[in-house]
Image 1 (cartoon, helix red, strand yellow):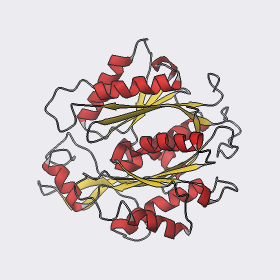
Image 2 (cartoon, rainbow, N blue to C red):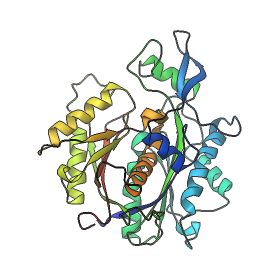
Image 3 (cartoon, rainbow, N blue to C red):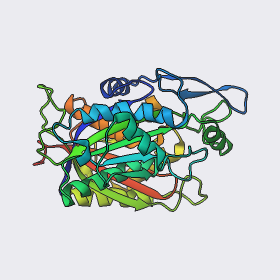
Length: 353
């Protein structure tokens, strides 16, 4: 299938209220981790990454006020294309998430449209798959743009782990970083969005005269299924991620030798880093002097469904401002269950694309 271009990005995170600020902080490894008003079993305040919103919104209104500014950043680059012609693929928490807010599958989409004062294309959808939702949305956007000739597609993700029932459930499973557990994640929250279109659409936000790239393209996407999930007792061999890697490279017509660094949803838990290391070991066939792995969760915490659009925005900024280790990037994401996804990105003037 033909590639698609990431044209613009928007972010609202614990380290910045727009994409440039968030990407700059992530580049500099700046975090905003602080004590929350939630207490762990050891009697200590849980550390988290909170978005500094104007008002102390809670529930769905909080999600709306995190994702809408990110969407506005992207829509500003839509040119003359009306929102009615742009499908919105809204990424939210998986249905199995403990403490999941009511209304994520219907009311949130309605509220987002109301806040923006627009109606999106009828092919819009809510993708309730947590961390892998962004990659799934990218695959859906590629199909909509290539098969149905839609001019643009808006991918947005929003999530918050700073919810009492959610924190309690993950602490009970020893997956939360607390005073009693060092092998856990720091909970965060964020809203992020990317605008996707066909190559050569002329709407890219890339306006940096020092940048040598024209567009940031998604060349391939792959999926896999992992039997040894994070809650499983089975030995981890990263078979699902290996499947996703191979499928993404086959789709892109590239190999692991053609990418220069990785962006992932790894959040600090050992399982995800082990999976990434095993998948690389089982896939790499040529020696690499350096192969960095970027994990934005180091700065913004675990942001669930927002991490996919956030990672795409980080990759776009790194390509435009020429601070990436190289042009090619492999993104990979893991669901709480068996689903694994990977995508291959590369600027449009490199390697003939």
